[in-house]
Image 1: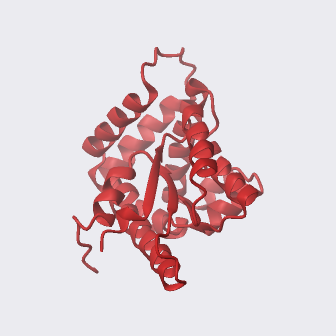
Image 2 (image 1 turned 30 degrees about the vertical axis):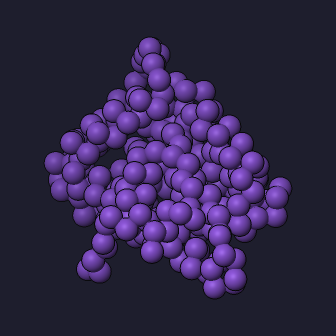
Length: 224
């Protein structure tokens, strides 16, 4: 079945105000049967309680925690450049779903599983990530930014080239998890007698093409 007929993905840049506006506008205009977001339960609760990952917390979590902390700091730095804190578009989706009384689904892989996979990254990728993460703390002037979405796409290509293992676990494997969860949501709506279910899914721009390929039936996930 082509699940893409029932799912509309909004590919966002987590630090772009334009993405937040698109999320709100699309949900309010489409009024879907379900809204799905790129979060798991732990990160959802952390966002709801406004809990931030500190360096102290990261140290307690070991190497995987430190890499996750570096990634978070990179997003914060990007937020300063683009004018929006990371995750604001997810909060916008949550609030829009609440406003309209639409069921909200958390479709991302469990963060503990992701961190476990990160800890198994090759030493070269860990070292490179640590070195690049340190540069986030250096006082640098603002760079000239063109089209934010184009910049983000370029960054994703570069990330895949420099970190093939981390790209696989942070992007490709999570694409599979989120696509399967979206399929389950559609199946549930169809089983309830909704003939043309409509699901809006808010995911990072880097996840959108891969998830769409899976939902469109052009990719077959093999159980490991």
